[in-house]
Length: 114
Image 1 (cartoon, helix red, strand yellow):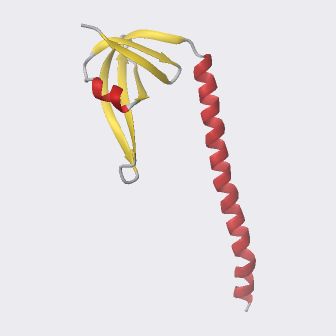
Image 2 (tube, rainbow, N blue to C red; image 1 turned 60 degrees about the vertical axis):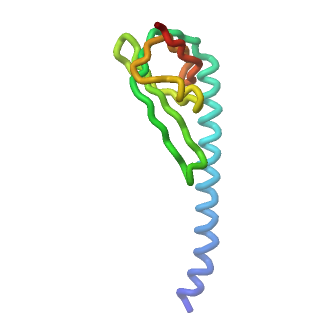
Image 3 (cartoon, rainbow, N blue to C red; image 1 turned 135 degrees about the vertical axis):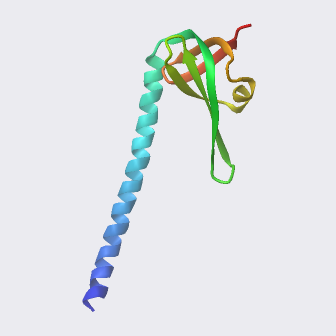
């Protein structure tokens, strides 16, 4: 009897706490994305010589969402990884040399040089 009473009072509290946690994570994610977008918009647009150092993809779910990543290496030896769209990903080849344009963490373009 005591256990049943405790369960009926604990379950609604537990569900409430989990709901608050889930909504908190969603709100934090939204605020974080907006903040990063504002930071990118306020960053200078830079164009630097770079080399395509690596490419990778990340597939989520049942192949329903694919994210394409390209890592560029600049002359100083620093590497930067950007998310690019699938068409851009397909056009870039590792060891390509060119001019990388980016703004904060946002990829703008890569112009291959001969």
